[in-house]
Image 1 (cartoon, rainbow, N blue to C red):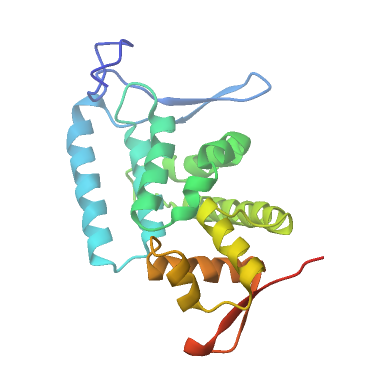
Image 2: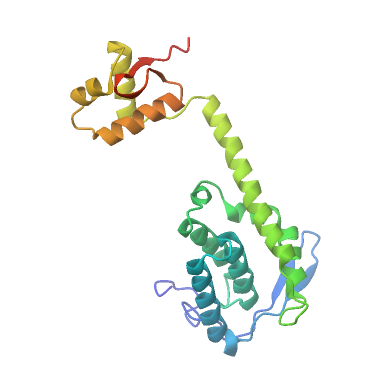
Amino acid sequence: MKYSNKDKRHRGGYKHLSNKVVANYPNGEQRVIFATTEPALVAGEMTELIEWTNKQLKEETIHPLIIIGSFIYDFLSIHPFQDGNGRLSRLLTTLCLLQNDYLFIQYISFENHIEQNKKEYYEALMTGQKNRGTKAELIDTWLIFFLNSLSILTQKLEQKYDVYKNKGGYLNERQKLIKKHIEKFQPIKVSDLATKFPEIQLSTLKKDLQYLKQEQEIQMIGIGKGSIYISNDKK
């Protein structure tokens, strides 16, 4: 943030003024969602939240998605920066998912999903926030919304992949060369391909053959070292 010219009083630092969250609805209605942490308490609460999150992820006694969902809920409750907390929370969601090997999130937008489901998003937050700091505070509604959102995103991604798969898979230039060579000189053994393409590591060559099989570009006949590969005639 040190390179930003926007609002130099706050860039990179925690908020100095109260920033309660207000939701704007399409009908023009405004509603206070929750009162956030007071500025003087932000640094302490953020330190505690980050330490708790890292500890829980390391111990692996709670499912990582529950930890990530809880972290985002508390981050939004604290609302540590003067502006941009919602957008930053979505970036943090993506970062946390990637760091915990939920790599699908790099191919579909969590931000866009929230924008399209803003009413449900705010209502899920409000359910817990209205009792924030008391024994009555429950975040189950938020966690269900969070987990359902991830489930919906994976389903959308699978649907996109099905469309893509029906059109035929993408082959990189190396895979195209291997496929063309098999078509011309079939049947081919792995050893034949290794001789023809010495610049390709054997492990990479095997992965390419596996991918070509998966995409139904070629067929494998036999098992083990005696296996041969032939072109899969789709005509």
